Image (cartoon, rainbow, N blue to C red; front, top):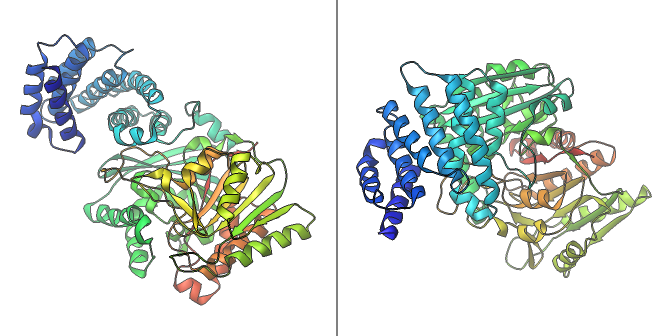
Length: 529
């Protein structure tokens, strides 16, 4: 009996998570509750009530709330925090859907739900499990974001949404005051948060200002976003070649991603922190137009994994050392001739400054680098250059995202289990700046966890990573690497470095027309300690 009920509960839950309308799964949910009634397991009964509650949310919010309250009375917060959290979220949604909405009541309910959802998150540490079982938890944070907005609490809405962003173990909840205090005058954070399939919250965070606007995303724009996301899902197959058609599609998205609120703040901005969400990680923000000029040419800019990255301090290598590796030839893929030469050149230029530098060469560069990782020999390498083939969009197996160092692969798992306290990691590798947005049978992951090469270097202790969003042209990639090094060694951060490189590449007609200046993107995990 118990096995059959659990199986039915899984089927009903999957219907909900797959987006089946409530009325179309209500009969199954009612049968589930009837079969669970004789059981002594209170948690299963409560979970069954939650499923039935959700089916009534759109048709009869009062009935949905009634079932949600019953579920909460049955469940134990200690043993089933996820069930209680979801029941609170559904009750909050029901309160907002009433003829006379009660935003403050919904806000209070979701604040309780957030605490429980966080507890459930801490218990789930396996990355694959987190990716496939996060939807209920994300539902809580979405409800909390909407409730806070309805109550006129934008700061609380952003703090609720931050729970969907990737966090390191032990990282404290977001304190928006710390973020604003860390921002200098002229620095602008643009925060995107999906509120539903067709609703996007766009917020701007500045030292003395916090504003937001909800944006409706029409079906045509959603189809364009799906086409960009498909590039990331297929990144491990053949990469992504950016075309004129992609550029034209971005022009359609521009009014959505840069609404009037954002453009009004861009006028006085001098540096951008961009925080995408879900499918928006596929967008090359450098290509968006503002006042007739591409964003990446006008501003130093970097993506961030969460708002905490603006104020978080990260200890980096205690020296000014450089470690570089460039691979020209491979067994089964096209050569990248010149990558070894740029690694050699950067090392020579660094040594000419009287600073320590090392270059890894074939054969066996991957094994040598892996040994150095395992032995903790990168503690003095503040600048790490890896120029080779690779990909960071392995959604089904994030830990197998890799850099092709000659005949061997350096995987994300190998990196994340090591120590790489570099101030800046430059990955001159195709699609190395991508992050997976779906996988493991899920088209779009509902949360915003960070997987792949970026996540690996973050876990290893790096402060900034530069990579390519699509297949980088070899000549442009070599030029970019040298320009980024020059900017970094003279004190520039990753955001300024890629702008300097983009402006230089843009001067070349071929690089300009082929968009060779645009794929390079930076991600900052924190400020230098």
